[in-house]
Amino acid sequence: MSDGQRSPTDDGQIVVSGLTKQYRNVRAVDDLSFTVAPGRVTGFLGPNGAGKTTTLRMLLNLVTPTAGTATIGGHRYADLTDPLRHVGAVLEASSAHKGRTGINHLKVICAAAGLPKERAAEALALVGLTPAAKRKFKGYSLGMKQRLGIAAAMLGDPRVLILDEPANGLDPEGIRWMRGFLKNLAHEGRTVLVSSHLLSEMQLLADDVVIIAGGKLIRQGPVQEVMGSMTKGARVRVRTPQADQLTAALRGASATVDVDEQGTLLVDGVDAPAVGRAALAAGVELHELSTERPDLEGVFLELTAGKAGIR
Ligand SMILES: Nc1ncnc2c1ncn2[C@@H]1O[C@H](COP(=O)(O)OP(=O)(O)OP(=O)(O)O)[C@@H](O)[C@H]1O
Image (cartoon, rainbow, N blue to C red; front, side, top):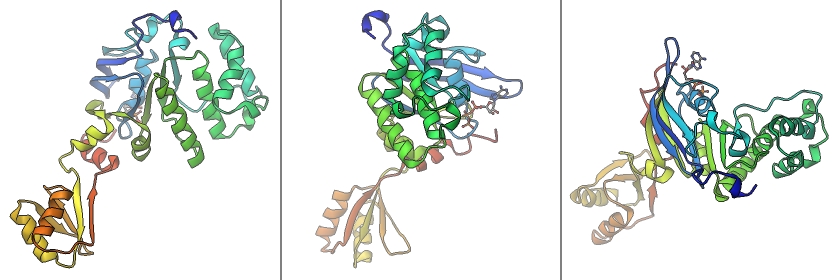
């Protein structure tokens, strides 16, 4: 699709502002604000019941907010004249008429949305399902159903993709494929918002993260920045046969030194080059000197601890 068909203000940015959803006695989403930039994969993270699905459903006009707004390229989803050409969404494993072939399933969607039926074969090719085009949906594996769901989302060549837990139930090969596919969409300049509780996966996939718990924003920013902003930042691992000497030297340089069961020193408060210099100055032999960074899992648990409640 040519960009000429899109409004010039449609940069594909998602803006969530003061978004709130109150169910009878559950505040599923609570005054949530964040932005999602085009050209990047944004991981939308939170423990079970954090409010991720409710937020995505509000973005897509499937749930009415109690308060606040959510816009995509400056427009509410409900105001988009041709939504499938702007936003592709995969909310759960694709469901389709069991006896219908993959290609026919997509053709039906094209017909309903006023898209050219040639898009069906193109979208199937995009997700690598061409060989299974004429197989019936009931014979599709979970991975193939996920791909078909993505193909359906891609029919309108949308600038914005919103996916709720797309890696759920996929095998490692399927997850690797999904990662490459979504990264590629972002490289093309599209906005890709992916919810997940698979933190390790987000570390490999996402450029930015939005972390929520108990319906509230906990943190947002580039993955590296969010990780780097943690109080428990990087620490230095050191192995040396002269542990006591090095510990004394480092404590003199106001570092904090712990020792693990293997006798490895774990140093906080100074970086690896500083540890190396302190060792050299003290004439201490080093067998290992490395920097240990907290992974997203640790960061996430620390950030959301106690905030999730029982939902
Ligand atoms: N239709 C509804 N009526 C009442 N409560 C709801 C409804 N939908 C969601 N909730 C509640 O809102 C909260 C947020 O749910 P939501 O599904 O958005 O979280 P989530 O982060 O997507 O969780 P998960 O990872 O488990 O899917 C939960 O406490 C849930 O029980």
